[in-house]
Amino acid sequence: MSLLPAIERQTNENPDSTVIWLHGLGADGNDFAPIIPQLRLPQEMGIRFIFPHAPEIPVTVNGGFVMRAWYDILEMQIDRRVDVKQLLKSAEEITAYIDHEIARGIKKERIVIAGFSQGGAVAYQAVLSRSDALGGLLAMSTYFATWDSIDLAEGTKKIPMEVHHGLYDPVVPEHLGQKAVAELAEHGYKPVYRTYPMEHGVCPEQIDDISDWLQSTLRN
Image (cartoon, rainbow, N blue to C red; front, side):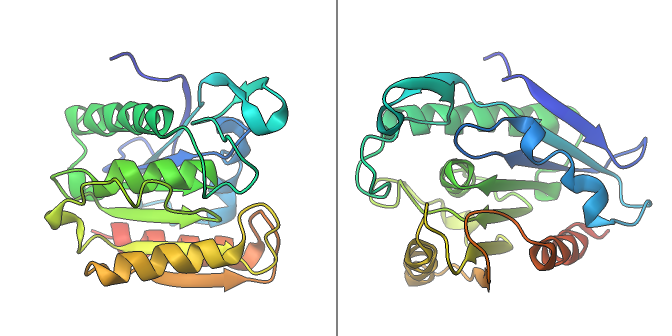
């Protein structure tokens, strides 16, 4: 499988860890690439950031307009009807990136997957269905779209996991973030849930928390 096009950045010349960061509906990899300097990570932390671009597909709730999307959304209540087949395909695309990073010499336990909104739903699927545990999962302003169908891998239960959500999110209501955390907890996962006084986006306080979490998770 050929890799999706992506933006790639490194914090130094010798990365020993990778963060694969998935954007939301209608955006592309450029959406989160500027966050790297805002994280203010120590220079000695060698991290390769990869920001893949989702494929361009028609999106039903947007009148069939073609845009970058990880999967089609069929109803405005986004947790009700999504194109699961396309979501699974996108998760396979991210799995290809994970395997590529392992082939480049990055240990699997030093690979973190982050996803915002649609990207978060794909991140849940890609990370928690793998037989080998990765280094971490960051799910932002999202929901667990494949909860009813995913085959959770037993070895993933100890993965460091952060779930972030805006209290006033009009796109992905905050209760869906709570629901994902509750579902995970029922199956032995221990996600950390953080909320922020914002809508559907990212705020400075959250960026500080992400930085702290990445440093804690990827410290040698």
